[in-house]
Image (tube, rainbow, N blue to C red; front, side, top):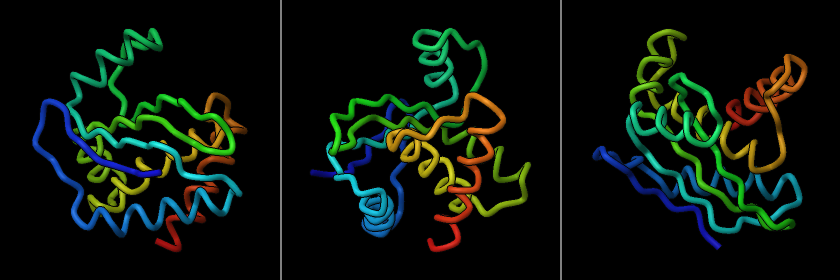
Length: 137
């Protein structure tokens, strides 16, 4: 299957998307799963805020929302990224823009793989896994 990118309400294309896809596919394979249909959608803060309100009843901005449509052993879903949040996060955490963008995309992939971040313990596990995969990017 395929990992694809699109944008909604903004003009954005991930540079060197083939490299990103290879990295993400290797992470999925490392979890002994297969890549289904995964769409990475680059969008505005306002669009993600509207989805966060509508689907999660959260009234705040977020850098990533993941909608999981997986039927194991294939993982599929939509990963929506707020480009504005990523830019702000990169400045706040003193990271390069594409490093932060990769972290946020990876965060969405990890949700599709079953990782959670709803408690301090699961968030710590997710961050550790992010750091591991970012180190080999």
